[in-house]
Length: 387
Image 1 (cartoon, helix red, strand yellow):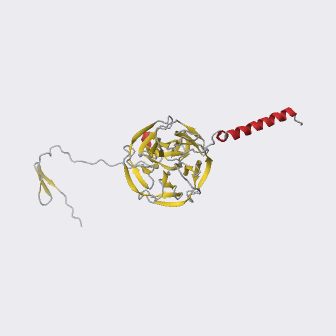
Image 2: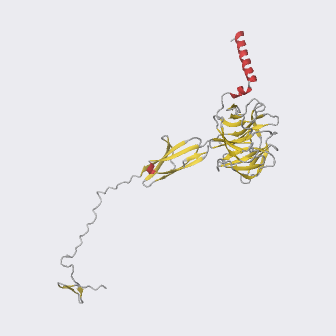
Image 3: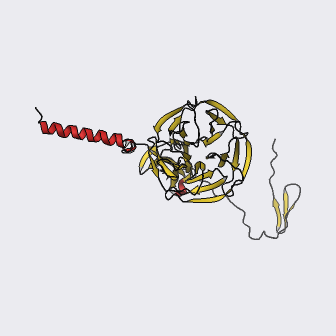
């Protein structure tokens, strides 16, 4: 089949137009439809001399596309951030603790920590303890008052961000020796894991996706070119995911984490007791137990009417909200019918009792020779000697 000259020109023009759009707007070309598994993280743009204004932003992970939520230059340097349950907490360079509304970008000041030059904030969801860092030290912080307690020195360099994973392990990034550190939560001491692979500088932050266990960073190279990275926790190496436009500084990086709800109930409610209900991190192996009440026995576990297990102790990994029912039934007691062919039981002879009439209130005196003296005369008793 031979194509016409006109159709060839149209095809060439369309190819040229698509290529031009790609060259003019690389960010637009790479955005497209978010890939399956995209996470919406949050951060704070702290530099207003580039293409992105100051203020809170949403950032797609792992694509790296950025969306400005609200232009806001009222905070000089928002530094560290993390989610506590569903709330985004941040700290600024001047030592204040904030909460930020992810939808509107509006922030609320909780209070001053009294510690200047703060660099990082994170929350240990396994213990409910929040931590923050300045250049060298690790602190704990009370979220309602912003009161801090010194834990200890992490390193003698410059810790720029800290992050806790879903198991409560604490990490930090030092931009003097460009090392990723693991941090002892009890002493604050940092142990270097390895070099990240380049010279990091200026404002940046790190945060865990607690669902996957991946540590991400919005890092800034010494050449003032930043990007989205993920870390190899065994070697410390930072792996590039997306290069940002020049002079985009993102700090207070926070990745929402979710908990799934397990609901376990008994049917009928009088049939027994069940345990295992609660909120759990994704992937947690939950054990459901069913104990039958007196007069009942366990049958099975069902979900939406479908049988999922016949084991009283049922284990399952939680990756979504679940609602399971432990089913019990009454134990039926069988009535035993008499055997018509069985012989009748022997009849008992009725006991013969002495008449009581006229004996009440009488005096009985046993005499010798087998005589019983009563008020009405003598009764002869026959005594038999037993050998």
